Length: 306
Image (cartoon, rainbow, N blue to C red; front, side, top):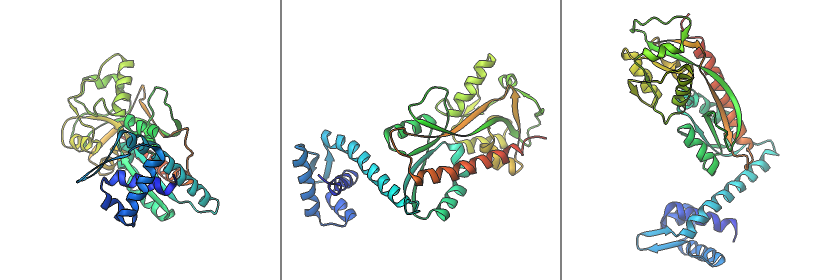
């Protein structure tokens, strides 16, 4: 068995078709079939079921996909680290981001990364905190930017920022926003907030429970940009971190005030699997995104009610 055979195997597993996989690998189909047959003889296991319509993984094949995928990633990391010794930062980085972070800085951060590190291949996805944690644990993601939960994680966490949650309403809403907003006041408001699948909702639920009441929202939506648009157009109010509110605060369509009695903080961190080395490329990507998030949060805090 060699790395070439493993790469051929992984490509065929992705494509599910000999012809497509051979084309992707830029080899002829008989050569691919021969390498896969050698790999099966080496393991003494059938890795694919062949049909007239393509191939599908056997249980042994599914096991090898998990193992070979990890091996291939580690080899890529080794190449990246060797290149780094020559002063080059290159390689593939897969990163997951919570929606509030992605929507606030992703466009600007991606442009900076592309300009500063042209040899980095970037794969970015959005997701809920719990989902992103699972993907980092399984190796599907190199890094994830998450709302830090209160429970202990099987990951290495690196703090980015603590951000205060804000009460926000539309500029047409006549509701007064005092300089000091009490958490208890939220009990009587018509709220639109994310669902319980969302990391921000868990932060709000915990804060409300500590204050002795339960949140009873009128509407639950996980798409934060949609929440902001609805608040701007209705009498509903929301509680979100500043970077999620910033676009409509800047546009003059929302008003906001920090909740300060007591303050509700969400902590944003980037997490990695402690069993895997953080590549130079991943560290460079996270540094840029972290700086942009910190600046976005500061800019949002300057837009609250005076």
